[in-house]
Length: 225
Image (cartoon, rainbow, N blue to C red):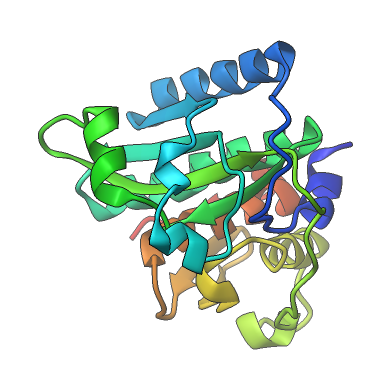
């Protein structure tokens, strides 16, 4: 399964079987998170066999069940760190999909106080969210998506740009709002714009990673704001 196939196959899953993640997959995820932390300055951690984070009313209300593994997404309290958290968190999500695992981004529906305490988050750091991970009871379902024209008004776009936007439309966003748009500046520069909604920084980072994978990083550069 390549990265684009993983994007198409990935759907949010909230109910898990409880089957343990095999050591080989744990190692692959740990290595990916180590690379991401080195590149980004984030503190992404894989926590396994720990059910307490999702043993609360909020998780039950959010229809989470049997969540025993998660990635804690931690970084500085800055908008740039939040965007990086989305970007690198989604990189781990798509690796998990390629390893045969299922995931769900979780911003609120977990035991936040208990989890923050157990993670011993340092001063000046923030727990942006968790990513539930494991073997899903189902593979999830595809949600309705906006069209290319609803997130971009570029006429006759180059093939790489269209491919990037189409990949971004596969990205998970808070309550599936897809509050983003893309602009082509000149021939090779792209601007990604967050247009509202919740978890704006996280969502922007996630969709930018998807766009890069679809468009090919060699074909464009991001506009420097």
